[in-house]
Amino acid sequence: MIVGKPKHGLSLLITMHGSVLPRILPRIGAVMALAAAITWIDTYLMPLQHANAAAFTGFGIALSLFLGFRNNAAYERWWEARKLWGQLIADARALAREALVFFPDAQRMDLIREMLAFVHLHRIALRQVSPDAELRRWSTLTDDSAVHALNRMAGLVQQGYRSGSVDGFGVRSLMERLASIGLAQAGCERIASTPLPFVYSLLVYRTSVLYCLLLPLGLVESAGWLTPIFTGVVAYMFFGLAAVTEELENPFGTSLNGLSLDAMCRVIEIDLMPQIGCDAPDPAQPVGGYLS
Image (cartoon, rainbow, N blue to C red):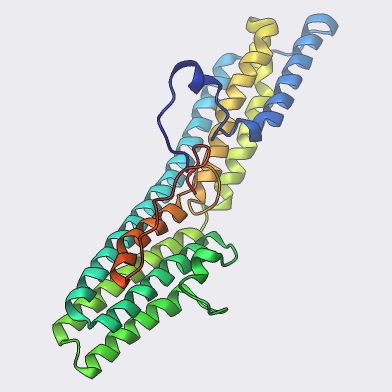
């Protein structure tokens, strides 16, 4: 995720860091080249059939509505994912406090270790990456998963109740906390496993390309050799919005606009590790303005 002080003026205008422009630049270049070819043919070779600008106005409004709807749906997924991870952070802190009240020291440390294993297993599953050193610090099982870690935490609560070290009120409080953690986990998995309907992407892409290909015919009569520039600006807006939507659609990815799952796991470690006798790590720092 891009972090840091917001840029202003010229620096914001020319920055490429976090921009989708490098991804869509070939498509913009192709559309501008076609617009230049149409302008040259219309000017020097043969007059072409010019389209009415009013038709493109209606076409553009409809396309903007499609893009806006899809962009709003993608941002809603991104923001919901961030809220779910915020809930996980709050639940992890609350679980540690409740364990401090209800659990003996040895069992409390086991519970907190399992919680730390859970958040890293959850991160690994959402990003679909290989286990890393941060995970192996808390879990060395080759077939481990976030669900297994959550079940082990429930098992520790059960052991505490059966041994008499945790009373019924403590069991109820801790199990409600684990249920809340499980709901946040399920919400994240729902977002990760259910992309936006493909038909929206297909419709927006085809319509955007068709609009940009036909637009020079509506501009060449009035804009002349400025037609490629105007066409390129419109293509940047439409193709850019489509590319932004693709990034926001997957909030758990490692793109520059994805959520900083590593940093949020580090926040939980900072809060919980002192309670098991470990030194709290330093907060995660952005590298080149990017916080992973």
